[in-house]
Image (cartoon, rainbow, N blue to C red; front, side, top):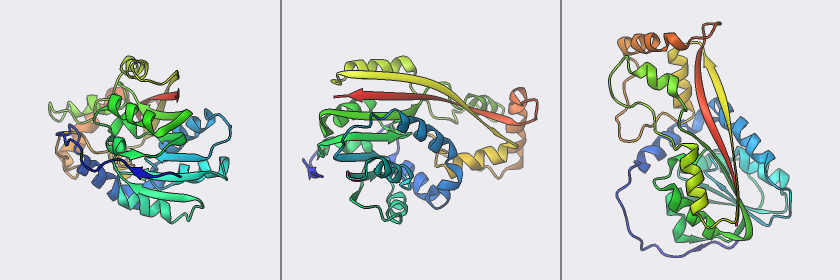
Length: 272
């Protein structure tokens, strides 16, 4: 794989997203991430099904995490060169433990893609781009990393995700306790404004269920998804906060007395 750093001198903007906090959140979750990542795996498996089974020489797993889908990609394309790309050095260390063949590793941020020159055939990115500061710029940078006819496969969350939890938090205070996700209309515009020739977007709803608020919050923390942009984390050990969240969740309880958590998922397939 051709790996070239174009320039290390670039304009440094003030991020809306605290990338250091995001990296810390996923690094902290890395040790037990695979125990809590069934949702990501289910979504990633659906994304894999969309990949055209053509000859592929070079692949980037953009936001590889512990390497679960890196291994899956190599099982589909065993003769390919793979780059595992992730913001968390601890996640990359977990991925390295898989001892994958024909694989290199790079610790970097998706919003820094423009400083590299990869030139690959396929980029796979499962549940990552929602952490981008500027998705339009990130999509443009990804476009530059692909060879002619190269393909990009993305899964991400849409507006409406985690809404039960957002409503429950209103029993605690007036602050925003979940991240804001783009609407399908937003993503359609970003894609249509990009240089990609062909695009396909599909959407689905997935719902997880938990026995208690504590179990739900523990699961979000375990999958590294508990970082909220611009807000300090709340101490979830407080009994009063848990009770208020339980009260806020009452309207959503299922017939089996479980607490649902909804994820609106968007799959994006782009061809250069």
